Every structure is written in C-alpha cells, then in structure tokens.
Amino acid sequence: MKKKISIVIPVYNSEDCVAEVVSQINTALKTCPHEIIMVNDCSSDASWERISETGKKNKTLIGINLMRNFGQDNALMAGLNNVTGDLVVIMDDDLQHSPFDIPALVDGLGGRYDICYANFRTKLQAWWKNAGSWFNGKVAEILIKKPSGIYLSPFKIIRREVVDELVRYKGPYPYVDGLLLQVTKNVTQVDVAHHERFRGHSNYNFIRSLKVFMKLATTFSVSPLRFASLSGVCIAIVGLLLGIYYVAEYFFSTNVVEGWTSIVVINLVVGGMILMSLGVIGEYLGRAYLNINNLPQFVIREKTGAKADKRNR
Image 1 (tube, rainbow, N blue to C red):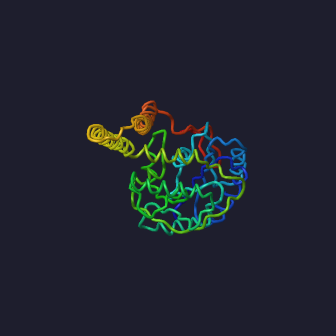
Image 2 (image 1 turned 90 degrees about the vertical axis):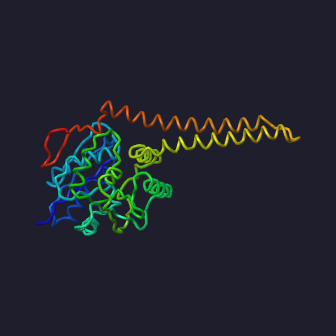
Image 3 (image 1 turned 135 degrees about the vertical axis):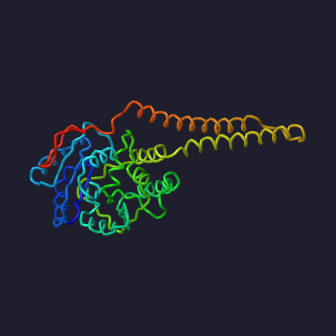
C-alpha cells in the first residue's frame, strides 16, 4: 500500500493560484493517496473564498483560515498540526515549486532519510533574496549546525514521526527549518527546477527576510549574546591599549595628543556596541516574555473541506 502524502501550503494573497495549485497536485499524485492543507494567513484578497470554493469541488482539499496574519512559519505550524499523512510535503502557493517534483522528493527520501529538501539549480528570484538565503544558510551552519551543502529550501518532504515531534513546540516564534534540525540531522536534498510564479507577485520582502533571520538567530542559540559579550571585551581591551598609548605619547613624545577626534571615535564605537548589545538582550527578553504569557502560535477561525472537522486547535 502506498503511503499517504499530506501537502501543507501557506497561502497569502494568492487568490489566482489556489485552483491551479490544487489541480496540478491532484494530477501529479493521481495514483497516490494524498491530502492538501491550505492555510490562509489572513490574506487581504479573496484567497479564502477561492480555497472554500475549490474545497467544495475537491475532496482532497482542507482549508484552514487564521484569525490574523501570523506569518509563514506560524501558518505552516497550523497546517502541520492537522496532517494525517505518512509523509508531509511543504511547498509555496505560487507554483514556483512544481507539484510534479513531489515524486522526486519521495524518491530522495527513500527509506534512509528523515527530510529531503529541494535544491534549486537556478533560483528565479531577486538577487538580494539569493544573497539573503546564502547568508542565512551560513548563519544556520553556525547556530543550528545545519549540514554543510544542504540548502534549507521551503520545498521539502518530511517523515510523519519528525512532524509529530516538531508540533510539540508551542512557542509564538517558530522557525520550521530550525525545529526540524533540532529533531534530526538525517537530511538530504535532490535537484529540481525553480519555476516562474504562476500569477501575481511575490509577497516576500526584506522585512520578512529579516524576521526569518531574527527567528534563526535568537530562537535556537545564545551565540548573539556571546558575540555581544565578546565584542564588549575586545573594545575594552582596545580602549585600555589606546589609553596606555596616549599616556605614553603625552609623557615621552613632543607630539601633541589630539583628544577631540579620538574621544568622538571611541564614544561612537563604544556607544554603538552598547546599543547593539542592549538590542540583542532586549530581543531575547521580549521573546521570553511573550512565551511566558502564552502568546498563541496561531488561532484558527474556521476550516473547510470534505474532511475538515470544525474544532479549532
């Protein structure tokens, strides 16, 4: 018997893509039992209406409508909490990830790996997004011990037992790839093509990329705090050495020690480092405070689809 596949798709302002995504998935997996879980992250367009309409015609589709915009990773967690398949695929809503590559991910997973990422040979996106992905990947190698050479693609397939461990995390700032690598390091990747967006334009901007970096940097490691401490120590040492140098210059040289420039430079550097350190500490404290106060990871307004129950989780 073939394993059932659950496909989780966060949807945000993609009303023109919904029906086509469902159609292509059903075609690609027509011989395999599957379900499609689309999570509407409080889109400002008619995405939820399209999901509801499509769900009435497709028994494979389950729609989840969130009460407000929680962000992509939170929407993914809402979907992952509702999967029933043996294998779970995560993909975007714009068809830059082709449903016809899902069998290749299944084959890549095989019986050996827990996660198989899609590695795009060429990424059809802005240069700054490629640069951000590269930078986040390098940071992830340090902070969450990402295997070198593995691209943390938003298009991936995961074994159900890994998902079951992942959804035990209830914090308000989930980072799915970070959580996955906390559960297992038994990962691989397969090469697939990156396609043009089916309709519309990307909703991913610099601010969203920065939020992803902050989740990566502050959720799974205290390295930023250690970096701030180390920087403070280094600056203190430099300041001490400069102080010794200027004292020696005053007593043993005929050169006049110009104080204004050095004081301004030192104040700017030290002041900047203090503010940066306070910001890092504040970010940790803020996230801890929201965790203590049980800020919800997501809140479901309603569900739709032939198999959807009406209980909000």
